[in-house]
Length: 159
Image (cartoon, rainbow, N blue to C red; front, side):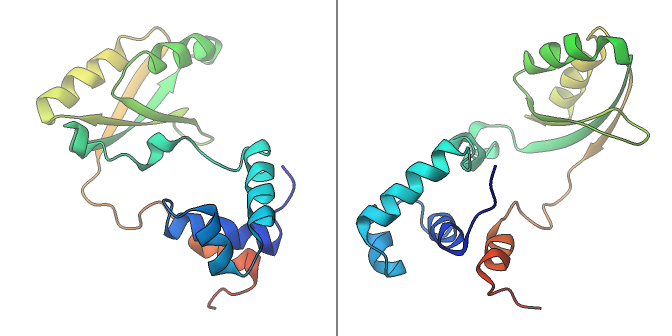
């Protein structure tokens, strides 16, 4: 994906600050024409600049207040099948391949400790999983954010 320019970053920052605003309101706020904002948004969408909306939904609001990170050690030759097995577990909300001691880092949600034990058991039962290590998320210290990076692109970051 090509690098964003200053105008793209301004538009994305405006969306992140107020995702419900209209294109007309955003154009007025940014001092751009409605057509410019609309064309830039279409271009950003074509370049896959936007994530799925479900990233904005709270898992706690869905009844899953407990978040844990599970490090998984796997049999490498079974990684493809394992990815499909993990995706079939609804409580697995995110998974990343890693370099380092563990092979995968999986973010899971659960209704509580007993439910987390059940979810971990489902992961352990997946073909290719050798062992897991579970860490509870005690507090979100820095929530997911892109504002500082967008401000850097715009050249307005605080040092």
